Structures are given as C-alpha cells and as structure tokens.
Length: 167
Length: 258
Image (tube, rainbow over all chains, first blue to last red):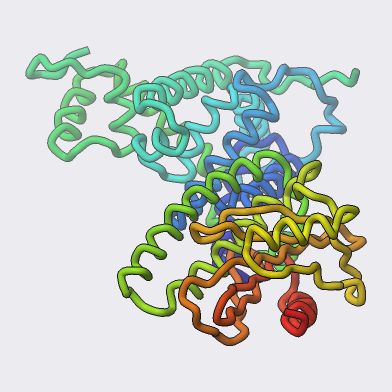
C-alpha cells in the first residue's frame, strides 16, 4: 500500500463516524464513505501531504451537501421500511429519545448539521471548521447557532417521530 | 445580555463557552455572568444537553479498522485508471506544479547540484504525464495509432532521434497513439498503450541533458508505478497504475528494443 492508502486506512474510522453523524442510517453513511474514498483517489494529486483527515472531512461534507442539498431533506420522502436502522451505535438511552434526536437531526439543513457535528462530535475548533469548509468563522458560528436553535425547537415539539408515509 | 462589568455577552460567546473556545479569563467572566442570569444559564444547559445526547449517539470511539476497509481502498484505488473530469483538472493542477518543480530541479542540476537530478525528474515527469493523459477519455493522444508511421516520424523529428512504437501485443497492450509533450524543458515523445481491460500505460522519451546512463529503476508514487532508465542521450520512462510485475514485464520489452 502507498503512504496515501495507508493514511487513508488509518483515518477511515473517523471518517465513518462523521459520515454516520450526517446520515439517516448506516447504509447511507457507508455509501458516503465509499464515495468519499473514491473521490479522494481521483483528487489525490491535490492533497498537499498534510492533514489527510481534515481533507477527507471536507470532501465528505461537500459530497453530502451535493447529495441532499444545503437545506436538507424534505420530510416524508421515505417510508419506515426504507429508512432502515438508525445510524447509531448501541447506546443505553431511551429508544424514544434516540429516535427523537435522530429525527430532529434529520430536519437540520446539511450545512448546519455538518458544522454541528464537526464541532461537537469531531472536536474541531471553530477556526478549523472555517478553514475546512472555506467559510468565514462568523458563518461557522451562525450555522452552529441556528443548528442548536432548530434542534431545540424540534426536540421541544411533541410529535417529532412522525411515521413517514409510504408513497 | 451583559456581564457585571457591563461588557456584552452575546449568544455567540455563550456558544464559544460551551465549546471551550474562550480563554480562561473570559471563561471565568462568562461563568460569573451565568451564575446571575438564569435565562442564559438555561440556554447553556440546553446546548450542553444536546452535546451530550449527540455524543452519546455518534461520539463513540472510532470504529476499528475493518478487514473490508483494506479491500475497499484497494478496489477504489484501482479505479483510478478511469478517472473523470475533476481528476483531469486536478491532474493539470499538478502538472503545472510538477513543471515548476522540475524546472527548479533542472536549474539546480545545471548549477552543478548533483548528478541524480535528471533521474529524479524523469519518473516524476512520467507519472505526471500518465496522470494527465491516461485519464483522458476522448483525446488521450494527438495522433492515433492508425497513423503510426506519421506519429513516430513526427515525434522522432521533434525529439531528435529515430523513434518507433515498441510492440507490446504479447502482453495484451496495443498502441493507442502518441503526442508531443514538454519534458524537462525539451520536447518529449509520449506513446500510450491500452489493454482490453482499458488499463493504460505511457512511454515517455526525451533527451537526457546529463549525457550519462543509469540503470533500470523503479518508482511508485500516488498509486502509479514507473520504470525508467537513461542512456547517454535519452531518458525513458514507463508509467501505469499497474502492478509492479506487470509493468516490469512490459518495461523489459521496451528496454530491450530501445
């Protein structure tokens, strides 16, 4: 394996975690990871040899944005059957609460969700996120702020776990 | 919202506080403010609860490397010979970078900066050529193989030696064609071959300013394998996203014929 491939392999677990935090289910997350790896190979010559993890996170963020749009998904597009398992690990939390959180996150726009996850789950600093996404730090903060506000609003509404209708 | 000294504490700073972005001094000020402002304290508590819930959901230690990950990387990496347009653009970006780098190397070389320089430029230039042209779908070459005689005469005249296209059909590769390329500040000749599986390889030939022969060498970078060698007048390099052994078999044929 080349150095590039080895480094790719070593950051794949983190990349997968980030993909899961952006996705509705683990299949979707895995698709995202694979697309990202493939894109990474085709863009490999533009990698400057430093911080592969951040470079991949940027690629994955953009792919996800292209896939679902900056504003996020429209609810009610998929049925419960199609939705599959939530993209979460086994956690000892109230399943209903977990579903509520998953549903609330799915309502966030892709841009807001990405910023929230990069900061909260991946532990990046505001300035790092700004550099990765090539946006001003003020935009990072406003997306974060809107993400938290929208999330709170969704969680405070009672009937979050709507049954998604089959079409 | 203001703190006790009258400085504004906005939502942005509360977020920064929750995310550990404040320096210790400001953090203490915000904490003092939160102790007195229940509304702000409730917001902070809410965001912290969100963070905890989100981390509980996704923030587990990264999953360990899976056996299948290695295979996936191999598989996806192997598709690189079928790159699409963004990769081509990226290839061009590299080409210019590499061109600059090669120029600098040549300058150093001419300044007496070490006889290894041409041998360093050669595989790099060959790899770059491969990355740019082998990914082209419609126009990988300037002159196609059906005009082989014209191709080798033309390129030979520009490079300054008699050229021919080595026959690699015993290994399943046929000539696609060729083009004139810049090669270490001189015209270079590039020939491209392809097999039935659409794997491509490029053969690059250009004059050797150092007039010194080297042995047969191998380099691998960015998933591209390159065999290269020089004689006292020319440098030769073959690149492809191929296994070393396969490329070696092909390179032996070319080496034997040139």
